[in-house]
Length: 100
Image (cartoon, rainbow, N blue to C red; front, side):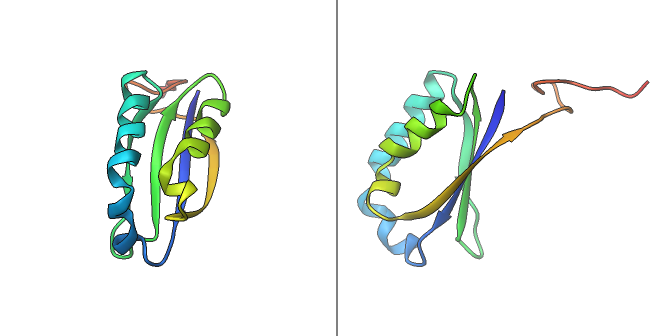
Protein backbone atom coordinates (compact mmCIF):
# COMPACT_ATOMS: atom_id res chain seq x y z
CA UNK A 1 0.00 0.00 0.00
CA UNK A 2 1.00 3.61 -0.45
CA UNK A 3 0.77 6.14 2.35
CA UNK A 4 1.39 9.86 2.68
CA UNK A 5 2.83 11.20 5.91
CA UNK A 6 1.91 14.88 6.19
CA UNK A 7 3.87 16.87 8.75
CA UNK A 8 2.70 20.22 10.13
CA UNK A 9 5.82 22.32 10.66
CA UNK A 10 6.48 24.72 13.52
CA UNK A 11 6.39 28.44 12.63
CA UNK A 12 10.16 28.61 13.27
CA UNK A 13 10.88 25.44 11.24
CA UNK A 14 13.48 27.08 8.99
CA UNK A 15 15.38 28.41 12.00
CA UNK A 16 15.23 25.28 14.19
CA UNK A 17 15.55 22.37 11.79
CA UNK A 18 19.33 22.76 11.43
CA UNK A 19 20.02 21.31 14.89
CA UNK A 20 18.23 18.06 14.02
CA UNK A 21 18.43 17.92 10.23
CA UNK A 22 21.30 15.44 9.95
CA UNK A 23 19.57 12.97 12.32
CA UNK A 24 16.25 13.42 10.49
CA UNK A 25 17.88 12.85 7.08
CA UNK A 26 19.71 9.77 8.40
CA UNK A 27 16.41 8.29 9.56
CA UNK A 28 14.76 9.14 6.23
CA UNK A 29 17.55 7.69 4.08
CA UNK A 30 17.58 4.49 6.16
CA UNK A 31 13.82 4.13 5.56
CA UNK A 32 14.42 4.76 1.85
CA UNK A 33 17.14 2.10 1.71
CA UNK A 34 14.72 -0.42 3.28
CA UNK A 35 12.20 0.37 0.52
CA UNK A 36 9.71 2.05 2.89
CA UNK A 37 10.19 5.73 2.05
CA UNK A 38 9.87 6.52 -1.65
CA UNK A 39 10.54 10.27 -1.41
CA UNK A 40 9.86 13.22 0.80
CA UNK A 41 10.40 16.91 1.28
CA UNK A 42 9.00 20.17 2.59
CA UNK A 43 6.85 22.73 0.83
CA UNK A 44 8.19 26.21 0.40
CA UNK A 45 6.58 29.63 0.36
CA UNK A 46 5.24 29.04 2.94
CA UNK A 47 7.37 26.35 4.60
CA UNK A 48 4.52 25.10 6.75
CA UNK A 49 4.19 21.45 5.75
CA UNK A 50 6.17 18.49 4.47
CA UNK A 51 5.02 15.29 2.79
CA UNK A 52 6.73 11.90 2.81
CA UNK A 53 5.58 9.16 0.45
CA UNK A 54 5.80 5.64 1.91
CA UNK A 55 5.19 2.13 0.61
CA UNK A 56 4.32 -0.37 3.32
CA UNK A 57 2.02 -3.22 4.28
CA UNK A 58 0.56 -1.15 7.12
CA UNK A 59 0.71 2.33 8.65
CA UNK A 60 2.65 0.88 11.61
CA UNK A 61 5.89 1.42 9.67
CA UNK A 62 5.07 5.11 9.30
CA UNK A 63 4.05 5.44 12.96
CA UNK A 64 7.42 3.99 13.97
CA UNK A 65 9.18 6.49 11.70
CA UNK A 66 7.29 9.40 13.29
CA UNK A 67 8.07 8.25 16.84
CA UNK A 68 11.79 8.02 16.02
CA UNK A 69 12.00 11.27 14.04
CA UNK A 70 14.09 13.98 15.77
CA UNK A 71 11.89 16.61 14.10
CA UNK A 72 8.87 15.23 15.97
CA UNK A 73 10.75 14.60 19.21
CA UNK A 74 12.12 18.16 19.37
CA UNK A 75 9.01 20.04 18.22
CA UNK A 76 10.15 20.98 14.71
CA UNK A 77 7.04 19.07 13.63
CA UNK A 78 3.90 20.09 15.54
CA UNK A 79 1.50 17.47 14.20
CA UNK A 80 1.06 14.84 11.55
CA UNK A 81 -1.44 12.83 9.55
CA UNK A 82 -0.98 9.45 7.90
CA UNK A 83 -3.26 8.84 4.93
CA UNK A 84 -3.56 5.75 2.76
CA UNK A 85 -3.09 6.86 -0.84
CA UNK A 86 -4.86 4.77 -3.47
CA UNK A 87 -2.51 5.27 -6.40
CA UNK A 88 -4.01 4.29 -9.77
CA UNK A 89 -1.95 6.09 -12.44
CA UNK A 90 1.75 5.56 -13.10
CA UNK A 91 4.14 2.70 -13.54
CA UNK A 92 4.50 2.33 -9.76
CA UNK A 93 0.81 2.71 -8.91
CA UNK A 94 -0.32 0.23 -6.29
CA UNK A 95 -3.55 -0.54 -8.21
CA UNK A 96 -3.05 0.65 -11.79
CA UNK A 97 -6.25 1.44 -13.66
CA UNK A 98 -6.20 2.13 -17.36
CA UNK A 99 -9.06 3.40 -19.50
CA UNK A 100 -10.95 0.85 -21.57
